[in-house]
Image (cartoon, rainbow, N blue to C red; front, side, top):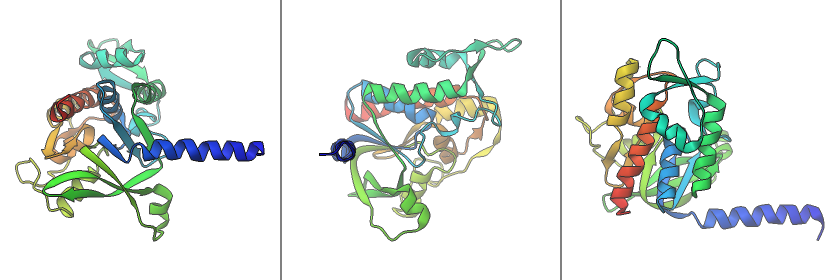
Length: 260
């Protein structure tokens, strides 16, 4: 066999094995932003079988670009223990005690590395177009390639069965929207609907991101800005402590749900 065929065969074989092994998981996470990466790492480290489905080529969400393409972000002291867990460096901000700056590229890449090396599997360029909903419970995802989705090609999807689904899709809360609009689920919110994200208020947004991280329907959880959008919290811009703590809280809640 030529080296060209050896290389191609190895890629097809190893990807197929990885994909087949993750068509049934404990936790299916949609979106690869910072809260999702922390959750994926903590879940996998605790022994859960985790698959992350990221629409774009590169996971990391809104972390890469920092604030308005200045590739620095801010984290408060409450979340520095999570940075330490991932080996991410940070510097104190003069005149703002308890707040630190860090390189957004280092943060994004370290979060991805930490999640993968804990045992989570990331499938990039895959989009979620629907959920599995059986017997009153969310039970997995309906997935397709992102290029298929964007080109509007008539190609049937595949499915991933999971015990829990975590919506980490950020501001749009895409999985929660599917749950409400297609499965007609009443979420655990004051109206049963998605309340919608409010304008920027940094202090409130940071606190509510963690507070709003919860199970919104049996088997369906939300973290990060998705949780804030569902429960009507404020946005907070390029400060990421709440996002990191949200991911850690989501993992804890899901592990309790799984009995791990």
